[in-house]
Length: 72
Image: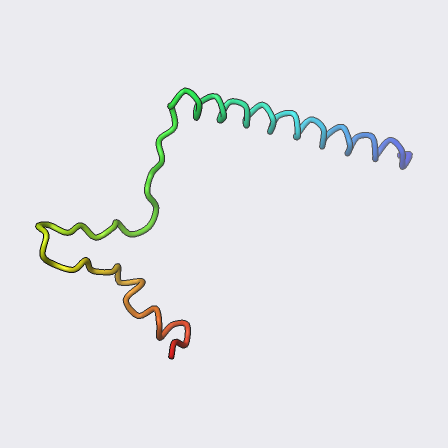
């Protein structure tokens, strides 16, 4: 195959992929504007404090943070 034909095919495929992604992004944008997107929390749930007197507890992944980064 001619080198120019291969380059034209690859360029056409990239343009097609970019068009599909632009269409998908417009759909996501329209859903966000319409309020149809809900954000789910990722990771460990936040600690809830019942009452008013206690101090909140950190998730277990953050309790030993100073030792993990070589804190003073």
